[in-house]
Image (cartoon, rainbow, N blue to C red; front, side):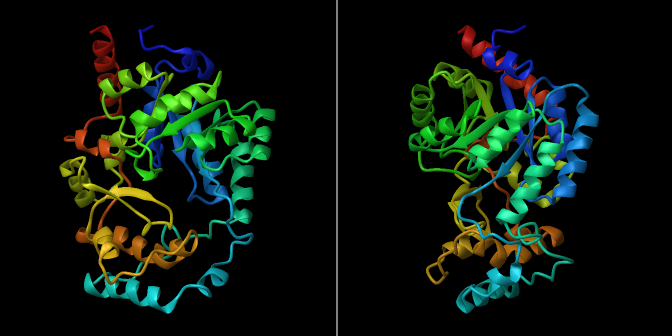
Length: 359
C-alpha cells in the first residue's frame, strides 16, 4: 500500500490511481499489469474487432480490471452510408485535399483510412455498444457524449462508467446520466480537447461533482502532475500522451513518427479541426500547417471532415510520408524524451508523486 491510494483504488480494484488510455492492446494490458487501469480506445473499431480485442486484453490481464472508451457524439447521421456523406462535401475541399496529396507525392492507400472504414453514425454506435456490453470489460468510458440509456445498460451488467468532460457546464449532464466517474480533461490534453486549462478546470469540476470522484486529465506526464492533481481534489489521473513513447506502443508506430514524438516540446502541439472536424490537439506537422494556411478552406464538421481526409490520412500513415506524419498528443509530450517500458513509466510516476507529496 502506498500513500497514493485513494477511494477509487478500492472502487475500481486497482493498485494506483492512474488510468491510462491507449489505442494499442499491449500498452493497455501493460498499464493494467503495472497496477493501473488500462482503457482501450475502440471508437474506430468494428464491433467484431471490439469483441475480439477486448477478449485479447482479458487474456493478457487475467483478473485485473480494464476499461474501454467510445466516442458517442450527438448529432451524427443515422446510417453508416459513406455515399450520403460524400454527396455533401464541397468540391473546393476535395481539390484542397488532392493538392496536399499531389504536393507531398502521397501514394494511394491500400484501403479505406482509419476514419473512413465506416461512418460515425447511430447505426455503428449501437453495434459498438452491443459489443462492449457483451464483453466482461469492467469500465465503460465515454470520450464525447454519455447517453443515459448506455450508462444504465452498463450498470445493469455490473460495469462502472465514466464521462470525459472539458467544461463545468457539462457536469450536470454527466451527473444526470448517472456516471460513476468524471474525467476533467483540460486544454493541455491530446486529441479531442476543450478550451479550459487543466489547472483551472479540475477544481471547478471537483466542486460541482459532489460525491462523484473526479480524475484530472490533460498534461499529466510526471509524478508531480499526479501529486498536483490530488492536491486539486481529484482522486487520480487519466493519462494518454505519456504512453505514446512506451516501448509497447512505439513498436506499432512508424519509426519517423516515434522520432517526432521524442523530439517534440510542449510548444510543438497545435489544436486543429482538420483531423475530425472537432478541436483536436496533435503534433504540429506539414498536415496542420497546410490546413492553417491562408488559402486553406475551413474544415468541415464531423463526420464530413472524417470522410474528406480519412483516406489520405490512412495513406500518410501507411506509406510513412514523413512531413505529414503526426499523432494526437497533449502538451505533456515535452516530457517524453526517451523510450521506456510501460512498467518503468508507471514506477516513475508513483515514485515522483510520493516524493512530491512527502515534501
